[in-house]
Image 1 (cartoon, one colour):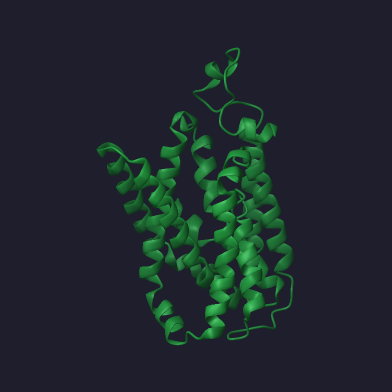
Image 2: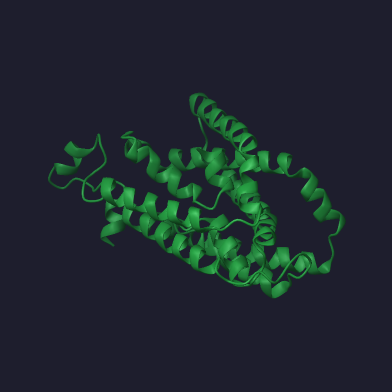
Length: 276
């Protein structure tokens, strides 16, 4: 799942959080820190695959690297980094439930559809520092579950009137430093927390399968890279959100019903966040 969801503007975080619940797994009984560690492993595998698959594109960007590109990258990275360091824990605890994730999917999908109606009159080499800042703010909003980093940056680029192909290139260019930085930060937290041998085995399996999945899915980038409308992705996000709302709201996850019904029991993960 990680490969396609990471490469397409459909929110990999929403899929990681909601698909296990839709499948009926006892996801909420797993230690939240261990779940987060597993997600770090998936993102690490995806990042390594992206570097390998887009190495030619990365080399081209490095050959043409100048102060303008440096400013764009810095301004696209700093808002996301600041928001991640300061707000990530709070956002995860308050906005991790089915309703908030579905809201992020619907809002992000709707804005992406509307933004894609803008003219396409800006192309390669026309991005400047102000555009980098706008992309950075868009990446920061992707901390909200369901918003999608890829979708948010594509939406921002299309609002700025970049062509669809250039919007896709800008989205990928500004994404890699953020993905690598976030993975490194969470990896450091994981090392400090420590893992046992069995956990390391499953984390390695997650990273490896994510690497293969992402590498095998790189051709999907062409679905966004060509001059194709973003409407299908927006509609998919809305449909996925409606499925989440229909299946997961108003009842505890499978496997925790008995605990949830006990007097004084803590609400299942996501319920407390949605009540807030």
